[in-house]
Picture 1 (cartoon, rainbow over the protein chains, first blue to last red):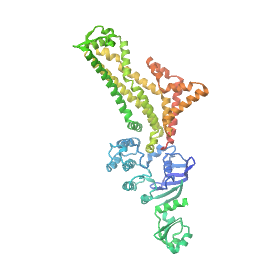
Picture 2: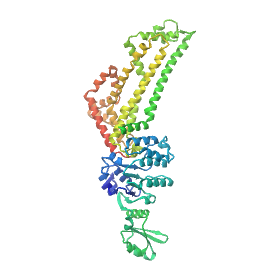
Picture 3: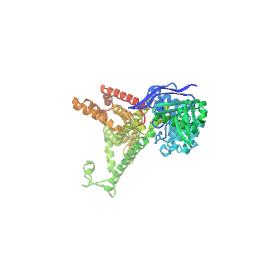
Picture 4: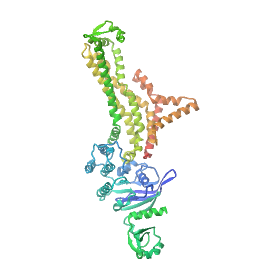
Amino acid sequence: MSTVVEARAVSKRYGDFVALDNVSFTVEKGAIVGLIGPNGAGKTTALKALLGLTGFDGDLSVMGHDPRTGRHHVMENVCFVADVGVLPRWLKVGEALDYVEGVHPRFNRLKAEALLKETNISTSQKVKQLSKGMVTQLHLALVMAIEVELLVLDEPTLGLDILYRKAFYDRLLNDYFDKETSIIISTHQVEEIESLLSHLLFIDHGQIVLDSTMDDLPRHYTQVLVEPEQLAKAEAMLPIHVRDMLGRKSMIFENVDQASLAPLGEIHVPSVADLFVAKMQRGRV
Amino acid sequence: MKALTTLLRREFWEHRKTFFYLPLVIMAFCTFFLIAGMGSLQILGDDLMVDGHLEVNQSTPELNDRDVYEYSSVPLEALFGDQLAKFSLLSVAEKENVLNIAYLTFITPLVPVLWVVIFMYFLTCLYDDRKDRSILFWKSMPVSDTMTVVSKLLTGLVVLPSIFFAAMLILQLILLLASALFALGYPVDVWDTLIAPANLVGRWFSMAAFLVFVTLWCLPLFAWVILVSSWAKSVPLAWVVGVPVVIVIFEQVFFRSDTVTEFIGRHIFPGGMMSRLAEGVSSVYSSLMNAEFLVSLVMAAAMLAGAVYFRSKADEL
């Protein structure tokens, strides 16, 4: 597989605040990467760095271009949807179509129009007349009509109600899943995208705290519903996370052999949400 | 080319009110005053008329002052007809002089408005989209920062003056048509009296040249405004005005000189250019071809390069 994004030792400071601290990761072609972290963890900064929307230190290559100097080259092959509200309020829907058609060589207007037909958006409306959910639909319609190699979504469903969120991810999955396109999605609503992802990146305090494919997760992380009599033994094996669950303790272990965990109780693959809580709390305690 | 045209259209969409409707409103105003003025001539005539004759007495001294109205009673047609007849007897140069003032006065409101519209446009052109976060959308398109700044520059220096030029052109055509229609009822040669001396085509060439010279002359100012717009984190107008004021005070206090102050003053509003225009286009042209003007162009280029640099670093505010 070829590499779409390669970040090596990328750092970004805002004064004394370290937004990205020596971050390294790669995104392979066709991967759907969840960039997951709490608010202020550095998700948006990381995405902006790889889109050339902010400066940084270190090496970052997006399809062979340094985004700091070649943003407009990068953008020929990358689409970006930020959280709702980046489309200018004065823009009419028809003008948005004209604009993207005029500046983007890979834009397929007919496809965008077909996507918009499925919504309640009319081309004569201005962005400010649309609801939040409709603005996101519009932006997604524009972006999905562009044939690119990488789609970057930064909290795309922030502030939307559950119906729109679900429709958004359904559409994304149906339209991109069988393609060669890679996707990076940042969010802190882990449960909603868990089933979509092929790859997980957890970020906290500007550092990558977990970098794994979804397939590799069971090999490294095990969740055990520990029987009460096995508690002391389980504690000794240093779980990274413990929580009470219906009278039993649920523990998550990292890189502990499953064979040695099996006697302690029921064994599961931890959900991404549980893993997220485990990893984030670990950094905080 | 397609991308650049799209970028220019995008500027027009955003500023439809000031780029399109504002000149239209000003044109409507000018035309309204023209018609009202002609109407009031008519009313004035009606008031003075008694039995189809014009009564002139001491209560209308402005008419009495003129030797034309020595007699106490003339037909209304004679009043305008006589003026027109007198005007038609003037030499070509004299006719051109009178009409020149009429045609320039008629479009005068458009000139300062154009200057303000360009200024306000440049002031917000690289600032508003950072403020409303739409920069994240614009920058997600394969448009280079140089291209973005060039499109803003062309909009302010070419598109806007062209739109206002078209408005001036239409207004002067309206004046020509109105005066010609007005004169049709009188026994004068309309072409020789009102149309030929108006010299509209030649006038348009010198007006176009004037606009080109003025925009070039103001380029350092406009480049400075664009630079501030690309970089200011808040209240760009305060920076646009504040920095030159500080420089001027600094120069006056520490160097007791006026060099920079005068340079800034000369390029803020092309008053000097306008007086030179009266002397003819070639005079303006020669005043451009000097060292100061070339220096000002280099400064403008440097500031525009700065604007491209800040744009490439720009993020939402």
